[in-house]
Length: 581
Image (tube, rainbow, N blue to C red; front, side, top):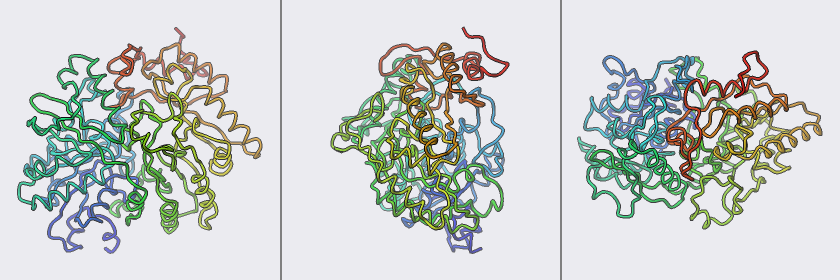
């Protein structure tokens, strides 16, 4: 019983143990509840708890039958919060070939089928049916990347803002700690928690940064807002959808943003600017909350694959300025790097070392891109005016501070801790962001035998569309990796990741890649086929066949046959070698 009190409650029994007669906020999530700072529901729940709110979590509720999981805590005092989990539910469920996946890494024993397709929409509709006057706040990667008109690969069509189909009252995009707290405070303090808190949400929360809402009142739209082409215009004209994406991405990459507005039917989706980047002190405070670093006791000894993957990992920063066209990290976490202090990182490692099955091995000292820790603009006033999607492409920004000293210092300090045998770097690294000192420290001390990197392709034309470094940078890094290994007497492998069927990639490009990998004696067993995920540059190019930044048409391998043929070029060394055309 005592252990249950260390976690956020998931049942009435647990709230009774606390002596609660009501709950302020109830979270519904498509993931299992793992009390670890790598999982959004745990982080937001702990942040709200630290701000004095009574928070309960309903992980993977049963959306069939009598909806008892949605009723277990009754009506919350302030709001319901809904997230599909750590992944978009459709990406979680389907392969690039639209085949149903047989497992789910965020579910006990990897069991599939524990969340619905379009999870956020399904949960919201049930809650609105049961409690129409209680605010429903949506967030997480699924809601965040579907906040405006977006292409849905699984239905092969443009979909309106998820606010339209879900019926949610407010959407929080990006990392939501500040917005979720501000919403709770506004309803509590200004709305006095009336029985119809939905009215309070409309009256007191529409100004909160990093939120989006649906309104039929045009007077709510700020006079300086940027107007996007309507959902209906985007449906009729792919060029207007491409231009919408360009405007959204440019504005999202600014520190000082402007409100975005998109008409849909007789309503308007209003997207408020985001909060400024967090400070180190703010991020430290989030990571210093009393996480147990384990799944909730209700799962007992069940294996949860996603937890096993991150169990001994430490995230040292948020954000990524790489700006890869197919990636959602910078769109969701932001382009600006927000780093934890060295002391906060060491405190987390000390806590991990107290867990009963600790064996002294950290699987990852990393982040979205492991080697961006504490990097930022030399002159922050220049960053305040910048709208570049990437600080690295098409060339490294001259204002970027590339000091690896703080990161190397952390690696060396962790290496000296008496309770740490090995500290590996499992996160991706940018090999175009590198110097000899960092490379040597990484390769000789923090590689577990195989270093995975992501060149993605060898065609510079394709790489330019991906916003990835030219192939020559990969070859230079490969030479550096081999040289350092030889000098240190190591026999480690460099494992490159590649993508087929990315927009702009032709069969000739894939043939070139097959030839290059053959020269390097690579025999890839598995290669990622491009999957269009909502609200990325690559997905916009896939749907429209247009580069939004140039207006020029590009080739897209769109049909299952075209995608399968491109993917097959990687396997030149097998009997099913494709015919080169």
